[in-house]
Amino acid sequence: MDEILKVKASELRTKVHSGEIKSVNIIEACLTRIKGTDFKVKAFLKLSEGRSLKQAAHSDEKIEKGEKYGFLEGIPIGIKDNIMIKGESMTSASKYLENYVSPYDATVIEKLKEAGAVFVGRTNMDEFAMGGSTETSAYQKTANPWDIRCIPGGSSGGSAAAVSAGMVPFALGSDTGGSIRQPASFCGVVGYKPSYGLISRYGACALASSFDQIGTLSKNVKDSALLASVISGRDYRDPVCEPREGIDYVSYIDSPDVLKTIKIGVPKQLLNYKIDAEIAKHFNEAVEKLKLSGTEIVEIDVAAYKYVPALYKVIMCAEVSANIATFDGIRYGYRTSSSKNLNDEYAKSRAESLGYEVKKRILFGTYVLGAKNYYKCYHQAQRVRTLFINQITDAYGKCDFIFSPTTLQMPVKFGETLMEECDIFLTAANLAGLPGITVPCGFANSDMPMGVHFMGSRFSDVKLFQVANAFEKISGFDMNKYPEL
Amino acid sequence: MLKEELETIAFLARIEIKEDEKEKYLTDINKMFDYIEILQEPDITNLKPTTHVTELRNVWREDILKASPKKVIDMMLNSSPEREGTFYKIKRVISD
Image (cartoon, one colour):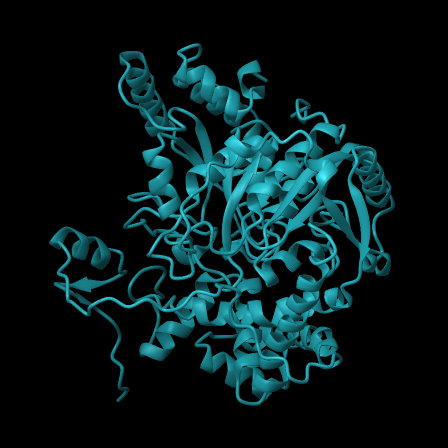
């Protein structure tokens, strides 16, 4: 593996902008790494080889001539395949969008283009981000670079695997119920989901709109902060985007004493779950490390955690059924060639182009929204969501951040299933619109990485990055270690 | 969920399900139902439903029609599997 690939994005940025290294050389190294290892990992659905090299050459020229250049000029990035880049395909890993060409740029892409970032390729995912293993992709199964017999997690499994394997220094993902943070943890990288509304979703393929957020995956916390600094900020085209200007998270990130000033809450409810013994061991060690750094640890009681997976299932599927209803095979996407009338056309187009998991969620969502089940299921889940948010809000009266293992299980082998509660502490953040970040903290059973998760109160993102960054320094995790492929 | 209900829901959602797939859908969806039963447990008297976590209010603008450039219109129409002029072409809506 080329040494250049071990340089973190924030350092690459300094080196490229000072002329020490050329962007073209970085992009070439990334492409070589991908070509040499991705036949095993299958993180990428599509590479933009020619365009990215051309763009890198252009970036180098700008820097050399002393012309104005962007914040991430010449730095490579991977993009999850549910975010639109104008004129390029975007499949969301579904047959339904196999031939779709994005007519416009997503807001985050617009911002990254302006910043001069180089899009190396599109990363694999679960179909329409529905899944936690990247196995529901209609195109390929992505492997965990640390053990290619195991899943990388999902739905942003391609982005997590690509960053983990050193193919790109960072990547974009999307997170509806843990879809950035769970694969990040499984692949031993950092994954950040912002407070709901800090990053525009305009131009990203919707799953469940009251939970969806775009976020970042990177080797270290600083690089996630770097990327978040570029892509966050108000956007009138996403109606729930907060009217707040973007924040330069990186400039605040170094806060050496932050761990001495915060109270961290550990949910009592952790004891109710069957947590992998190695994960529990590493987590307890992490708690001890925080204590040694002067952090006050308190126990918090959020009884409603136990409703999280169930209420997420109801609301997510209901929102899926509404969002996917826009896929009619008329304005774009797959259309059947064997239909008799319009209704038949919708039904057959969807039947032929959508995978089982997607169809199951639409049907369940339609059912819980129907007259018979609306109050008993959907309305009830929305009210239990309120109960959960109230209890979490109370918990933040006692602590600044909630700390837990990122997942309750280690990545499983292909074909095996994760337990329903595996991502419970991640989904909690989506239900309440809170920011969450996973930081790798060690290697568990047979050299597989695992992470711990910090969840902040709403809009505490600046401090969340500070805390995660400070923890990273004491975690003992060697971020310069890469999987052998 | 009963088989007839599955068929109704599939029609409402406009998804064709083949006869031999129905059993699997029913098993899986009924498992999901059992799983969410726990939501009946907590006391939620006086709690309002949460639809969104933001505290944003609607903002309004003047309702003025802005014409899109022909290039944009073309690009959108070209995304369609079948177009005719400035129209999307679809199957007949009313059957014989």
